Length: 141
Image 1: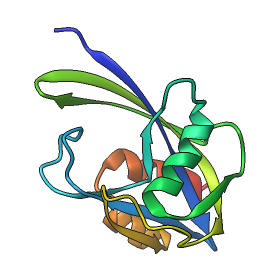
Image 2 (image 1 turned 90 degrees about the horizontal axis):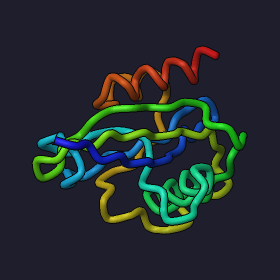
Image 3 (image 1 turned 180 degrees about the horizontal axis):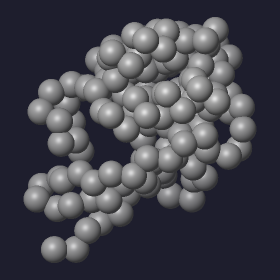
């Protein structure tokens, strides 16, 4: 069976030494059987640069207006998911961001909850080990 490839981008949003994470509702693009905590992220649109997609996705998913701290990604995550019996290889680039204006808009309806938490709480909440590794890397630089 051939694998499809999917590219996405998201934000590592740090505010006063706390991190912005989101609780995603169960979606058909996830192997998870229930909602899960992670970083705001999503698919690249046609012709969109990963850094642009990252900012757009954070704004859409959280309602927070954010700004990139660097044009280069701070982390990359690669994993495989299965959707309708087809394997999809995902690559997600994460960009470090800061909050320009919190709670500007309503969060996306795919998001169940938003949290701005300290490192220890984020480690406890994040569902996937890969996200925990990224958090440790960002906070230990």
